[in-house]
Image 1 (cartoon, rainbow, N blue to C red):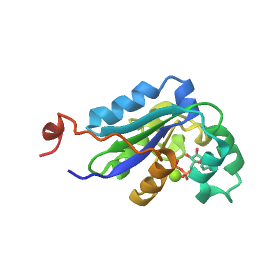
Image 2 (image 1 turned 120 degrees about the vertical axis):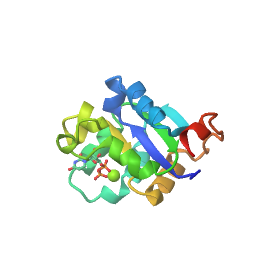
Image 3 (image 1 turned 30 degrees about the horizontal axis):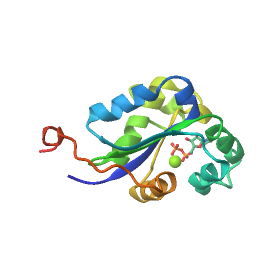
Image 4 (image 1 turned 90 degrees about the horizontal axis):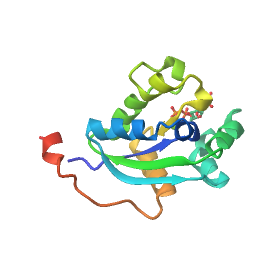
Length: 150
Ligand code: UDP
Ligand code: MG
């Protein structure tokens, strides 16, 4: 089984709107394994580091304020292809361009309130997981693994 991991984060609007269970349900039901999970308020410097590649963009200050505006649910999900498949499950950055059936396509309208983050590459995922989970994640093997992977 691949040990690929993705950093998935329910943003403050997703938490405030009661979408935590819905998001977790979708990743669980797909067959991915939850390896890390915490509800946390985000210090400004952590939000800035997380989005450091976007620091020159005009929306950066508003983006940092948004991420720091309430608690987020920080998660690590593991499984075959979880980075690319997680992005597909999340949908396009602009929710109006997200397909129905995706998380953003089902639950969001504006790019600045798009409910959820997912790593865009395996390398980004590794960077983001070490940033958000410096303490490490849980080690476990789901009993259902042979029923999900051949
Ligand atoms: N964002 C924004 N305005 C934009 C583009 C992005 O507010 O014009 C926000 C949005 O919340 C997005 C985040 O910045 O999710 C990170 O942008 P990125 O291009 O990495 O999109 P993502 O990977 O989240 O789909
Ligand atoms: Mg991104």
